[in-house]
Image 1 (cartoon, rainbow, N blue to C red):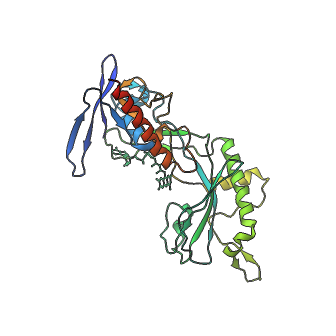
Image 2: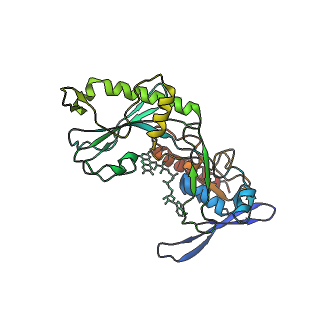
Image 3: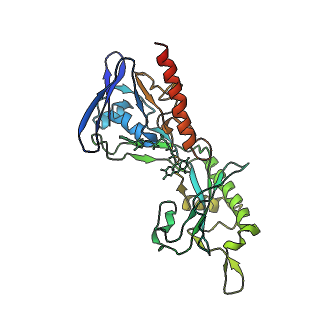
Length: 304
Ligand SMILES: Cc1cc2nc3c(=O)[nH]c(=O)nc-3n(C[C@H](O)[C@H](O)[C@H](O)COP(=O)(O)OP(=O)(O)OC[C@H]3O[C@@H](n4cnc5c(N)ncnc54)[C@H](O)[C@@H]3O)c2cc1C
């Protein structure tokens, strides 16, 4: 679905081309005072803008994409809050699956603990489960999400002509030491949780008469003051909650009304415009952003 852009003395979105679910090709044009509102998400919106000729000139030229307007920050500042933690095998098959409660800590990370039901096939929630056969008990994930990571990366096209080829994206997880510190804070919170009597029922009986957790993937590092080991654990346990954002940031790509800077009749309204993933989980805020901008558009239209 690339956009149709006109570029003379000024640039303007004039329409959209797309294929429907039967593969038929369509062109749709903007009517008077209308606009194109792009809501393809943090990966889709920067991809479509780049394919439409908005982006860094040198990059677009290297991809043989005709440049409509130089936009150096489209596809830049891509971020995804890293997830760290442990996955413990539940001795019992829990029916209480999913994710119901979130903890907001003073030290930064959000604690979220989804349950994976028995006999699940390996899923991306558990990156380590690829080599583990389905279990007949549930797996409890105790994870910390680094809130507001400072590490950012980029999005590049893998095809300059085929919109169905997903772009390449690099979030540069843990490039910034501050993010590692927050991961370390999450590790400490999880350490305290594992030591609490409330979690004793998740321990297995050991042959020596003791009790211990069974982990899938790395166990928590033993020494909390060994920064190198903590850093290594953060990288080894790295996973995601899929709260990616960035790529079309305000003041860099869009203005305060989320209109693309330097282009008429074109707005981006989705998570690509977030500096940070809002709240513990972003979906509700993303929907409210849609309503907020929708109301703004209605007010603007009422004025003419
Ligand atoms: C597996 C997963 C689980 C999640 N769980 C939660 C959760 O429990 N709670 C929560 O708050 N958040 C959750 N999130 C995050 C949340 O879904 C996103 O933050 C939110 O949907 C972002 O909204 P958006 O409008 O930016 O993009 P999206 O909701 O991704 O919408 C973008 C839309 O554009 C379409 N699109 C993209 N490219 C094109 C194209 N070229 N042509 C036509 N259409 C296109 C896509 O198909 C999609 O429908 C989850 C995300 C994932 C991936």
